[in-house]
Image: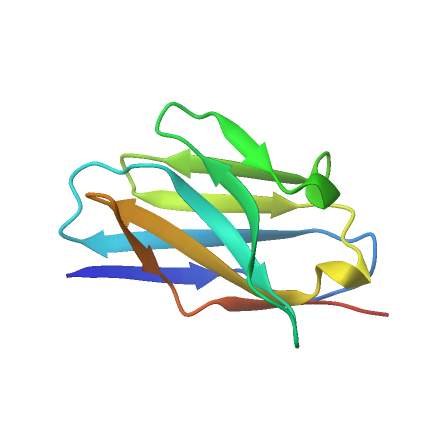
Length: 115
């Protein structure tokens, strides 16, 4: 019923930038809080950034000042602008969309930060 698709990942050098996008489709009429998560090899999935319907955002401490989350309620999209990327940011990034208190995940997009 609900599909979530991420895009925008890729290979970037340390200090570079990437913009991730997430599109939700299906039986969605109004979006609740949404967010981005990531999972590096051998590590647990962790919260990166979240945003409420009203646009209030919060971030993982290590990405504050470097990442910016945004949303477009009409288009049902979520974005993550990633600047000043570091090797430790390397991970698969996942979008989570909440609909009627149920969370839906995308398949993820890989971000690799390396020289």
